[in-house]
Amino acid sequence: MPSIGITQTPDGGDNKMMLGLALRNGLLPRTQAEIQVGYRSEDRTIAGETFAMKTVPVTLSLWASPVPMLYAGGGVGAYLQAIEYDNKVYPASNDTQFGAHLGGGLRFSPAPIVGVDLQGRYVFLKEKSTELASGKFDPSFWALSAGLVIGF
Image (cartoon, rainbow, N blue to C red; front, side, top):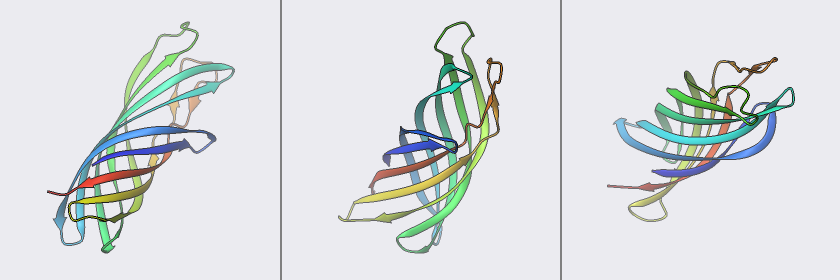
């Protein structure tokens, strides 16, 4: 299921685009398991210094559907993060963080083998440090996405 969405950090700022690709399959009645890989990039400024943070989340989720079109649940994942500083004074850094997410969505099928998936989730990540003097920030984020479901 390819998807495109917007993300935003808890401290506000601009909305950023996120791309994703997921595989979802029935596990138990009214329960689905999902593996998803995504990509997001954002620019942040701390103490007047700007840096770019690129994140590649690889997540596993478990979704429960109390009614056929709605689902809710959560999961865990590894978030591969790269930070590049604009001024090139500080070295770039690569790190992997483990986090969790909670969310839900709406899934409907306007055609027999094609559907639409609208999802919202909040990703919880630990505070991250940088090379900057006041170098800590919260990398957690909201994500709202729309995906194209292709049935087999």
